[in-house]
Image (tube, rainbow, N blue to C red):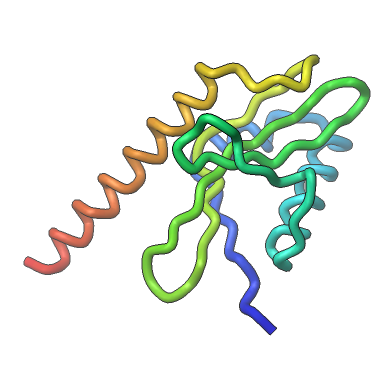
Amino acid sequence: MEKPIEVIFLKQAEEFTNSIENNPKKKLFQAIRKTKKRLFGQWFTKLKSSDGIFEFRVDDSGKFYRLFAFWDREGEEETLVVATHGLIKKTNKTPPAEIRKAEQIKREYFEEMEKDKMNKSK
């Protein structure tokens, strides 16, 4: 059996999940638990026209809750970083500006990782 996927929340993702109501929060964490067990479905998909951005997506009472994420394959373990932020939409379409924001946070994350590596090797 393959190792489970580790899920890490960066600050904005944590703030988003703390701010939403209990029912959609439960659904979102259920989707994350499934993904950690390497079960994939409509709750976790790659966003088209993005640079490696994925989203956890749940629907509750006609609202769509999205939590953006990307893969960090640095090191031995495969880690999913829930890095960017979340949003609540009344439509099922993801705004391009939100995708760009997620891509920017992803770039900053990897730049920071590279700086840390360089500092450790000194």
